[in-house]
Image (cartoon, rainbow, N blue to C red):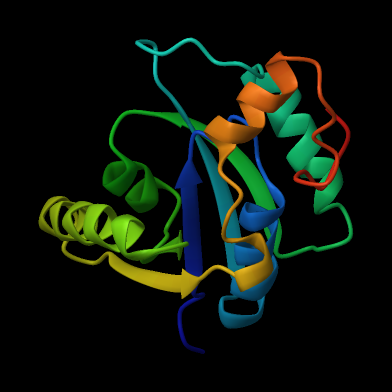
Length: 152
């Protein structure tokens, strides 16, 4: 039996958007399991707590037995190794994302030789959504329901 194909979809997900959901839903068809890894950075102040975000994401994917959520601290490539993931799943909205993600993919591969990064192009109707913009909209009291797969 071939080894299980586990993909780690890492990010701060502050918040987790419909664009992120799109990548996970498509990724779960390509891999045996997708682990949504919420990275913890003690240097950054989160807008949505890790606990609340974990709960929201878990509820979003409750119907899918091959999607789970984990939190982690430290290097993504090292965390991938600890959970048995040989793939990083990343979404690309534009060429700016590609430039950034390409360099990160190369560093991750250097840290963990067994780790390949797989890029999925975000669905065009969702490509304009970014977590930072959603945070700003929400912070100033406007509805963000059209950008998120859950209620914030």
